[in-house]
Amino acid sequence: MREPIYRQALSHSWKLVWHNKILWIFGLLAALVGQFGINNFVGKLAVAISTNISLSDYFLGTYWKVQGWGTLLLAWLAVIAAAVCIITILAAVAAQGAIIAAALDWYKKKKTDSLKKAWHRGTKHFWKLFFLNVIKRAVFFLVILAVVSLIRNTGASNMTYSLIFFILGTFIALIVSTVTIYAAGYVVEDESGLIEAIIKGWNLFAGHMLVSLELSLIFFVFDVILVAVTLALSTLVLIPTFVLSLVAGFTGLTGLITVGIFISLIIFILFIVLIGSVYNAFTISAWTYMFMKMHREGVRSRVLHFLGLSRD
Image: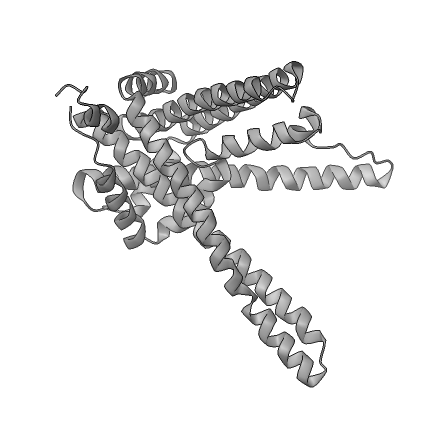
């Protein structure tokens, strides 16, 4: 088994995403069904633990009580929302499959034959990828429910138990997320059935548990760095507000301040969308690249190699 070359995986994935900017749009769509990795889970678990709202309110929201015409209006809004939701899910799951397909081609040929072909491969495996995402989200929900319940029942003041439950829940989420990633790879690459892909994904994870953990930690560090850089650069979007506020001060046209705030808000939203789209496409590509390395060649843990405990 070969030593994991994370730098190569990250480098090749970045080249793929940078030279095929249509993947940025795919990354934006795929983000709607969640990122690869456990970062979303950790954030949701932290919010669920830190808030006092009930879990039903947290996951399902609050029901609005309406009567008369309000009921009819709400029904129409529900139909429209359902239609938009269905279209969004179709596009999001297909985009996720398209990025995986493009990353698989990039791994094998160092190029992508056709992103249109990759999109068709994503739509071809829609239902299997869809149910993989549903299963992952369902398990995440149950894990968060269990962790929060255990923490609340043992008392929030007991930090030791809270930390143990938090780590345990995160580790379970790591397993589920990674198996889902590998299963998605088997679905697109080998056209495996849903159950077969999950079994293969579990076997691949079991054989590369430390490697999967190491890659998860790498992306966790990337997430922290990305958030810090994004927050730092976000201050630049205030430039229009600052400039127009100065102009408003000299001219007395106070409405320019509102215009400046609006422009800054639009720039900020576009900036966040751009960063998220590129990073999500990059993350999926990197995980897929490592999946192919494990699937075809086998890799070994960097930690075990450093300690001299790995076997060739």
